[in-house]
Length: 327
Length: 125
Image 1: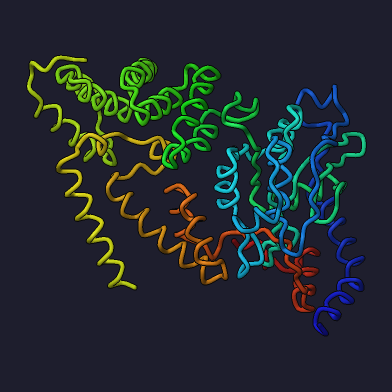
Image 2 (image 1 turned 90 degrees about the vertical axis):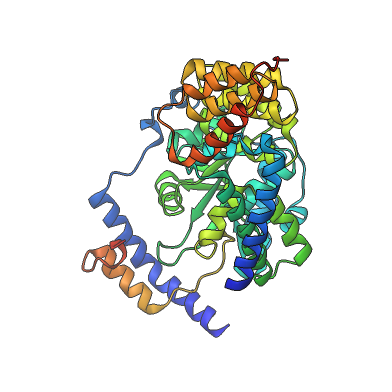
């Protein structure tokens, strides 16, 4: 307690000096960012934006993870209390919550947290779709971090400020400079909540959407994954990964003809080794040995990581009677 | 721990090999998680590593005061790629919690020296 008081009074005493020096340093070596300079076109039309409907859960001590997660889940239409989420993400021994556990907890509540590109405009863009953004800040220093989750809910371009739900503060206004500093030190991590049954958010990439959905496949929710991948193939029809992912979900649900047609679409875009292997496997299970071997022959070169899988598939195809009929 | 590990991995490998000898079908699909993880690896090796990582991460959560049954449910929610990320460096991962940090005098002096440009302690990495 004594130490803490000492620390607090020291901070009070030193802070003006530190902030003065910090300010001097900044103006000397870097140009402070301005919202108006961002390439996000809508900033010109919407100089001020705030998602006032976003719920607010004032955080308990160290519990910014559960509070921030409850905030974005609530905004996505899924009401869960921070108390419930604390059991799913809070780590007493670390006084905090880990990023991957936040992602996993979102999936528990039928939402996926999609990673955003580590750029300022990518983090602002989801607000235009009424989606607040969950992000990690480091409020301390690189060597003495003070990790904190907050939720971005708005911007004010004329004031060059961002608006966040943060800790006990319903409407924290943070200068863009300070935000970029803390977000930079936090590794520029930001995610947006999405309902896998709805079309993907405008500002996410195909790969990030699929990466967010993929864990649903192995967690006994392949039907939810299939819906999300179908939306992905509609949004990104020339993305081979989307078709491959859709094929895997259909395969997991026992839809072999559906899996085969999706894989055919994938290899028509790029003759990817994983897609060709999976196409061969599906054809084997449909009894089409000759067609399976044809797919395997198109793999060139064989990636070392897939060598044993491809060898297994080839053995299975060769072991089949040649006159087996496709079905 | 080393013995326990090798015993577990031996059992898992044996179980997988025996399974794959009579059900080759499922083993030969490349999963979406493998495709997006950016670290394509042999599927069987990945499964064994995933199994070990799950045990490691669960144990670490319990050490940090998470109740055993909660820890069990929490690791069950993690994908193989997420588990692997955690198992590698769970200690170094940021745990967002807005913990109160008492800034020492030495640190402040260092910081001021750094900001003024006298030293270059904090940018070495």
